[in-house]
Image (cartoon, rainbow, N blue to C red):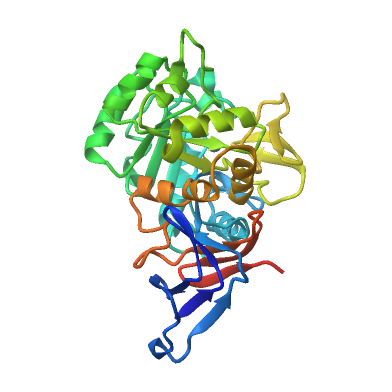
Length: 378
Ligand SMILES: [Zn+2]
């Protein structure tokens, strides 16, 4: 067993000092004192007064460390899995792009075959981003491969699918959403890359759509006479996620979104293969992307995913909005975990021992996955 001492533990609604977090593969105890009779070979980890929280969960990430989910190889998944712990991320949804049917099937099969074989951050399943979107809001997705929702593309991979981004105004989506809500309730259906009106969005929530993908991006803007998806999300209790890289959304809109959605807000990266890499020219979904500093864009300037890290998103939200440290951490731990229905995302007895130690600025000191150290700052 291992015990972390001298920590500021981020628990559900508060920060606890002076308590000790003990774990093996799972969290075993949160105690006042170490009980040395527990185990002969107890390992003590001194957090040196830093913060300790559950590991971060990214619901929307295409790649990192030079690899992309659409590479559809076990090596690519292993690279992403082993790059993410340095950002505090301990599990993620491998996110696909709008590409050919053959490429999407290959990526789905690859995740299905290797989901349990990666040695870093856990793969929780697939987030299918496209091709069931609106071609007019394709963003950096290849519009030539957009198609109406259908089961034939995904029916062999229903268990590995955990989230689908779709556009409710597209013909056939109502039937598709109702079918999945009934038959595959483990799949989060999310409105995104969509031009739905306020009314269409609200209707889709009644069918079973329960989330919104990168709110504000790749959707019609909020207008006071046509509030669109953003208005519908603000006016309902669906969850939503945002890319807090300060490029996709202005800081004042981050604050607004936080105030409107509170504990319904999740932070994602939407990172592409250049995540945690140097500036340069990369590929995303078969298209050339120029990465410079913290921006990833197509040659025409369209933002193409991001190179955001979840710990940086936390820093942005806590320094530029009124979101507290605990609320921000919940937005990458407890809230996405509850959305997925998994026993992660909280420092609670019986939960997976996915743990992050970080300093005041969210710089990651150490990352532990299923009780094992996977990253340590030099
Ligand atoms: Zn994306």
